[in-house]
Amino acid sequence: MVRIVLVFSLLPFVLACGSESSSGDETRTPPPEAPSVDAPDELSSFAVGHLTFNPVDSSRDDRELLVDVWYPVDLQDAEGLEPRQYTLAGIPGPESDVALADAPVASSKMHHLLVFSHGYGGISTQSIGLMEILASHGFIVASPEHAGNSQTNSDDTFDEAAANRVPDVSFAIDTMLSRNADPEDPFFGSIEEEGIGVLGNSFGAMTAIGTAAGWAGADLDPRVDAILPVSGVIDAGLQSDDRPSPNAGFTQEQLERITVPTMLMGGTEDVNVFLENNEIAFNQIVNAPVVYRVDVIGATHTHFANICQIGDFLIDTGIGPDQWPIFAEDLIEPYENTCSPDVFPIEEANRLQNLYSVAFFRRHILGEEGYDQYLTSEFAD
Image 1: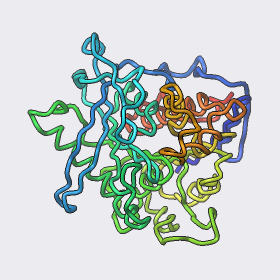
Image 2: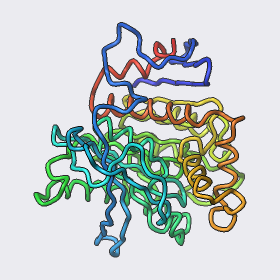
Image 3: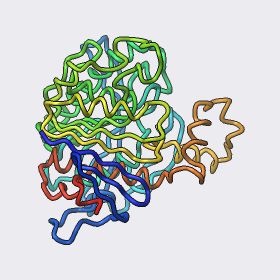
Image 4: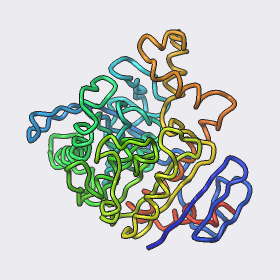
């Protein structure tokens, strides 16, 4: 297996591969001799569409999930379409600069499916920028809002929420593949049935790991071919002296069950989920063909979500931080720790997350070897 550690600060970048290390000035372009590929930290050749729907899982007591889907759109079909206005926990949110409403799915080729899982008590639109750039690179990205463990409905206990997570992702896969097979559906014939990736943030990172390792009573999903967990708990003992549940982490045996390409991402200033979790996973995921660890120096737990976009939107609409305790108290501390001018720039954290997510999935789902240049120590030079 291949094991690669990538460690980044703003300037300079530092990256280590195995026991060797190298450093150099920041670069956003591949070396001249590398194959030409689309820049992974920029929007690519597709326009982006967005829709939501509410499928019902009849096998689990008619469990209903809100699912957001971002998907590629042929450029000629994007002309004249209105931008998508997102919702935030059921209320009108920011208008997208990228995604379009009521756009047809690109017909130029079939597309691979990714499923994104949000954080504990979060929302399906927590990582809009990442979803949009992945769709522009040709992926169809489905993001289920986990009922019972979302901002609008948080009734589940920790263990109940954990038990639902992997089945929710599998249901999202089932649903999208069913739509792909329905001649009356807009997604008919547009999704590749093999080559599926899962990514997630925080509790969603644990969900992504669970789809490849099994978790909280659910078996792994054999259709998942690559995972990208961001800031996930591996050993709850790192976070506190008490492990609240056997589901608050993963055993070495579980991690050894992972046999698909894996990228572990996190921030060095994350005090919610310490970066040592990724070190443990990196050392114990021994049966995957390749494992990457991306450490962003200076990033906190919320540098990998839409905290600043959400907070700025509220401020722009006249709802200042002094009003947040009434309905969005949980936003106050993350906004201060993530969006103030004296912390690691959120734009750079987002760019790095986009770059490595796109490069990882284009290499290990689409098989495009040109993206190897972004996943080696040479890129840092």
